[in-house]
Image (cartoon, rainbow, N blue to C red):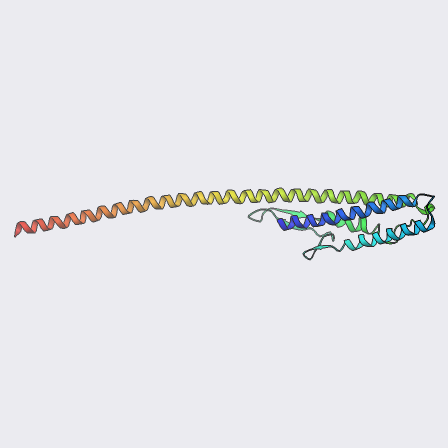
Amino acid sequence: MNNAISFLQTQDGVLKNADKIVSRIAELVQLATDVTKSTDDLDLYQTEVDSLGDQLTSMVDEAFNGVSLFDGTTLSVITSQDGSQSIDISDTAGDFDTDVATNLASGSLDISSAAGVATSEITVVTAAIEALATLRAANGAQQSRMTFAADMLAINKVNLESANSRIADVDIASESANLARFNILQQAGTAMLAQANQSQQSVLRLLV
C-alpha cells in the first residue's frame, strides 16, 4: 500500500510539473496576441511553445519502477489483511496523454503571427489547464483514500497483535495453574506413598 501511495505521489509530481509547463504555454499564447510584437518575437514564442510541447509528450512515458504512470491501466491494490478489499488506481491519470500532451504537442499550436492566434488556440490551452486540475484532484483523492486505508490497516495490525498477546497470556496463566495443580497432586501422592511405606515398616516391627 505504501508503494501504491508512492506511485500516486510520483504521478502527481509529473502532473505538477506539467501544470507549470502548460501555464508557461498559456503565457506565451497570450503574449502572441499582442499586436505590437515583432515577427522575431513571435517566432521565438513559437519555438518555445513547440519545445514545451515536446517535453509534455515525453512525460507521457514516465514510469514508476517500470510501471507506466499514464497508460490508463487500472492497478488493484489490496487493502485488507484477508485480501477481500482493494482500491483501484489510477485510470483517471491516463487522460493526461489525450487531454493534455497530444493537444499541446509540438506543431499543435500556431502562434507565429499575432493575427493567427485564434480563440481556438486559447481554448485548447485553457482546456488543458482544466484537464490537469481535474487529474490532480483525482490523484489527490486517491492518495487520501489510500493513506486512510493504510492507517486503518496499521491500526488493525496493532489491535490484532494486542488480542493475540492477551490470548497467549491467558493460555500461559491457565497452563501455569495446571502445572501448580499437578505439582501439588504429585507431592500429595508422594507423601501418601511415603506414609504407606512407614505404616508397613511399623507393622513388621510389631511382628518381630
